Length: 101
Image (tube, rainbow, N blue to C red; front, side, top):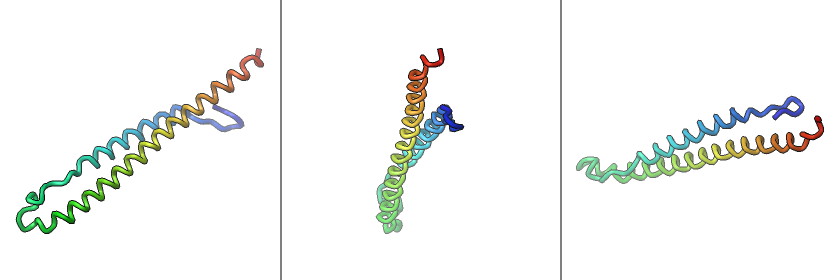
């Protein structure tokens, strides 16, 4: 859409939305990958560290989950912006279509 020198590349918005969605999926997969293990996995003497390690892993998973959610919402917003620009452009063309004839 061009108006007074302003241009929106809807293809760029679509591409960025797709890449942002892919990033959200990768972050979500990383969050899913860090699942807790049994305390015995740390060995007999390492069980002392099992609790703090599990708590730290849970905090990391929670942060990654939040990041994935926010990134996914960003991708959705980019898609909505692209759709909004296309809808506006179609409406403008339709409104002025008869004037050019």
